[in-house]
Length: 273
Ligand code: PLP
Image 1 (cartoon, protein in one colour):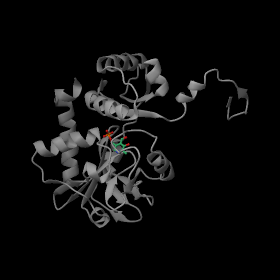
Image 2 (cartoon, protein in one colour):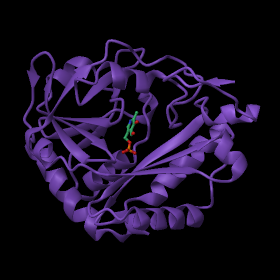
Image 3 (cartoon, protein in one colour):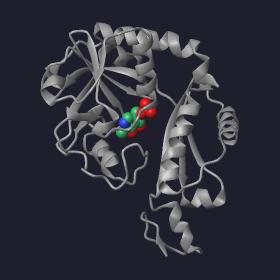
Image 4 (cartoon, protein in one colour):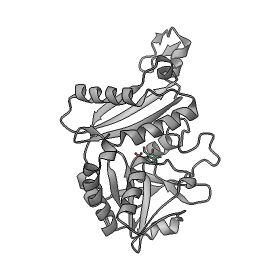
């Protein structure tokens, strides 16, 4: 039985397994297009496969996923770039299918210029999670909840059990102090972001000073610059962490990376296969 929450009309669902559609046992990916082409699909696919493998879900072959998305985007016929969310759950696994949600992307060039405001979540990341942080799923509960709780801010920074900075609820974080760019390691308990990975490649290929290590809160709050990375926007500077810690937005390193990013993503075929 299923009760429609709007008017409490009783509806009968014929198959008990249909609950698989709704029970949240799923993995997902968020992708986007630049100039109508899907960006870094291969990297997203590899992460989707790893998440699905952990959860015992099936993913389509890469070529099938790619061609389905390309024709879906064409049919959507949007004049702007789009964001694509892929969802795989027990139901789709059984039916050998997947969901793709396509929507126009709202470009936020103004925020890229002015920077965004963050808060630090009061809640810490669950210690010893049943589902490891590399698995992209809403099953672990915490990130969707925190996104909702702190939705007055662009994102909230979550600390781990030791009080180290991990990431936002939808983004990875980098700080810059005295010209050195630092980001928490995967072992701090973060999602290995596709954008993070590409930014690390950029930093390396342009020989910028860089460290991957645990970051304490005082280091975060006393940084010269902070930026976030996530698929929908690429790199986004942070101008303030509430209540009143302010940062150069964009600072020199962040701006350099944003410029590199823009040149690099267009030029590098590896991301467009
Ligand atoms: N960290 C978390 C918890 C996320 O949910 C996301 C993206 O949704 C990211 C980081 C950024 O990952 P990506 O660059 O692959 O979008």
